[in-house]
Image 1 (tube, rainbow, N blue to C red):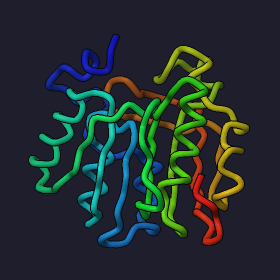
Image 2: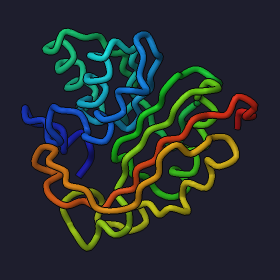
Image 3: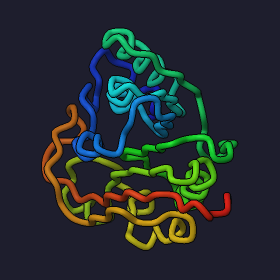
Image 4: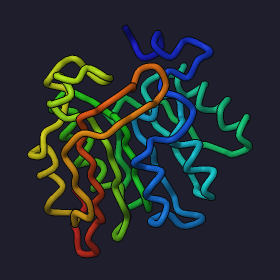
Length: 203
């Protein structure tokens, strides 16, 4: 099933409320920050970020998802900038964003590595990368996410960030998630927050 097909319903299949992990990072967010939300689906997290007074740009590969995000933003009285982007071939800008967010963005390993390198390139010095993704242990739980182990994460996958970002938070374990009809129940996740070092070279 393509993402356009998955999102082609009036229902927001992952819900309309932000991811719980992201919601708890409000202390890192300040009015006017420029934020990029990648692989953002139907826009639940991007809309919430805009509600916090942030300048939010959203990338996704599904035009249907982007359109639903735009409708949700209108309904909630905020503004988003949306772009149809294939992260496999994305042209990442240099030192552009104060925050980059990726919630349950799952890709083949070569794309995953390219995305993480792109994140380090696009963050401003001092900027934050925040992500919650399913780990390989999620296959045993079956409460959401890819059924292909190659699309899931391990702690080692984050080592590509080590040269450019300082790790502020890392968690590998099980949390409870109730996000629409497709994320329901105990979930094996990896959470990561990193801050780009001032002396970091853009990749």
